[in-house]
Figure 1 (cartoon, one colour):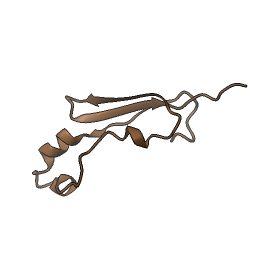
Figure 2 (tube, rainbow, N blue to C red):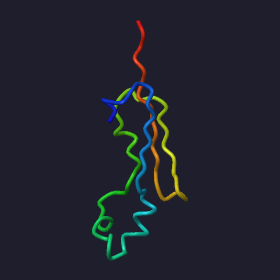
Figure 3 (cartoon, rainbow, N blue to C red):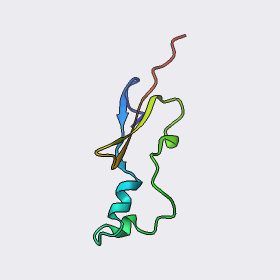
Figure 4 (cartoon, helix red, strand yellow):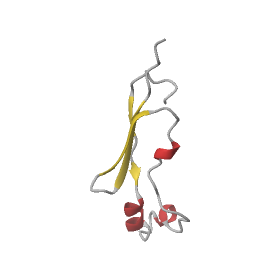
Length: 78
Protein backbone atom coordinates (compact mmCIF):
# COMPACT_ATOMS: atom_id res chain seq x y z
CA UNK A 1 0.00 0.00 0.00
CA UNK A 2 2.79 2.38 0.87
CA UNK A 3 4.49 1.94 -2.49
CA UNK A 4 1.46 3.11 -4.47
CA UNK A 5 0.12 5.72 -2.01
CA UNK A 6 0.65 9.42 -2.61
CA UNK A 7 3.22 11.15 -0.38
CA UNK A 8 1.55 12.42 2.79
CA UNK A 9 -1.07 9.66 2.83
CA UNK A 10 -2.12 8.70 6.35
CA UNK A 11 -2.41 4.99 7.18
CA UNK A 12 -4.40 3.65 10.12
CA UNK A 13 -4.16 0.00 11.14
CA UNK A 14 -6.41 -1.74 13.64
CA UNK A 15 -6.25 -5.20 15.14
CA UNK A 16 -6.90 -6.98 18.41
CA UNK A 17 -4.51 -6.53 21.29
CA UNK A 18 -3.50 -8.94 24.04
CA UNK A 19 -6.37 -7.89 26.33
CA UNK A 20 -8.99 -8.91 23.76
CA UNK A 21 -7.14 -12.10 22.83
CA UNK A 22 -7.10 -13.22 26.46
CA UNK A 23 -10.87 -12.77 26.69
CA UNK A 24 -11.47 -14.79 23.53
CA UNK A 25 -8.96 -17.62 24.02
CA UNK A 26 -11.59 -19.77 25.79
CA UNK A 27 -14.41 -19.26 23.27
CA UNK A 28 -14.79 -22.49 21.23
CA UNK A 29 -15.26 -20.74 17.90
CA UNK A 30 -12.02 -18.71 18.07
CA UNK A 31 -9.86 -20.49 20.64
CA UNK A 32 -7.69 -21.96 17.86
CA UNK A 33 -6.72 -18.46 16.81
CA UNK A 34 -5.91 -17.17 20.29
CA UNK A 35 -5.06 -20.16 22.47
CA UNK A 36 -1.53 -21.44 23.03
CA UNK A 37 0.21 -18.22 21.99
CA UNK A 38 3.95 -18.28 22.67
CA UNK A 39 4.03 -14.52 23.16
CA UNK A 40 1.73 -11.57 23.72
CA UNK A 41 0.17 -9.58 20.89
CA UNK A 42 1.98 -6.22 20.66
CA UNK A 43 1.13 -3.34 18.34
CA UNK A 44 3.57 -3.85 15.44
CA UNK A 45 4.94 -0.30 15.27
CA UNK A 46 8.47 -1.72 14.96
CA UNK A 47 7.42 -3.45 11.71
CA UNK A 48 6.54 -0.21 9.91
CA UNK A 49 8.81 0.68 7.00
CA UNK A 50 11.72 2.96 7.86
CA UNK A 51 11.17 6.67 7.40
CA UNK A 52 7.43 6.82 8.11
CA UNK A 53 6.30 10.08 9.73
CA UNK A 54 3.89 10.91 12.57
CA UNK A 55 3.98 7.36 13.95
CA UNK A 56 1.51 6.87 16.81
CA UNK A 57 0.16 3.78 18.54
CA UNK A 58 -3.05 4.08 20.52
CA UNK A 59 -5.47 1.70 22.18
CA UNK A 60 -8.93 1.99 20.65
CA UNK A 61 -12.41 0.54 21.11
CA UNK A 62 -12.38 0.41 24.88
CA UNK A 63 -8.71 -0.60 24.84
CA UNK A 64 -9.43 -3.89 23.03
CA UNK A 65 -7.72 -2.89 19.79
CA UNK A 66 -4.44 -1.23 18.97
CA UNK A 67 -4.34 1.45 16.32
CA UNK A 68 -0.98 2.37 14.82
CA UNK A 69 -1.13 5.30 12.44
CA UNK A 70 1.57 6.92 10.30
CA UNK A 71 2.13 9.00 7.16
CA UNK A 72 4.11 8.27 4.05
CA UNK A 73 6.86 10.89 3.89
CA UNK A 74 6.92 13.53 1.22
CA UNK A 75 9.99 13.60 -1.01
CA UNK A 76 12.73 15.98 0.05
CA UNK A 77 13.11 18.87 -2.41
CA UNK A 78 16.67 19.60 -3.37
